[in-house]
Image 1 (cartoon, rainbow, N blue to C red):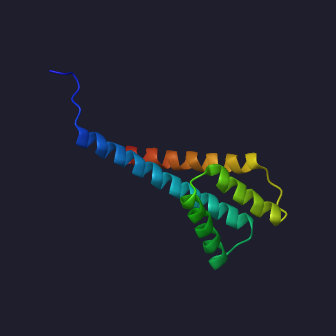
Image 2: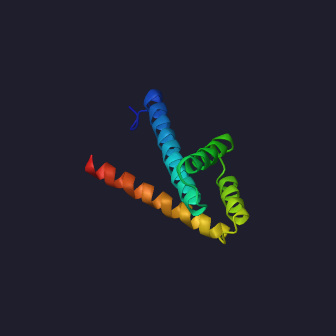
Image 3: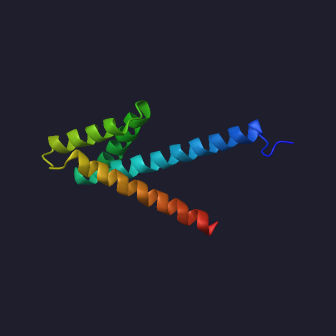
Length: 110
């Protein structure tokens, strides 16, 4: 008898679970990044909501961190806001860490 049994359905279920988790964490990250950028650009109310939707939709259309970063960087430059690509990447990384820590806390509480 084999040491490990391979149940295809449980493997596929776990893979789907991992992919969904990654999708939702990326979506949450992108929403927070977009809100941060919108706030720095001075958007409020409907303008903020529209900017966030545009950033999220553009990422869903072409899922690329580089494209999202370039879009935000261009928006900042167009408004005369001095920021580097590295600054935006650092902000994204800090948001990812917050999301990861929040997930770990939720897992420990469950």
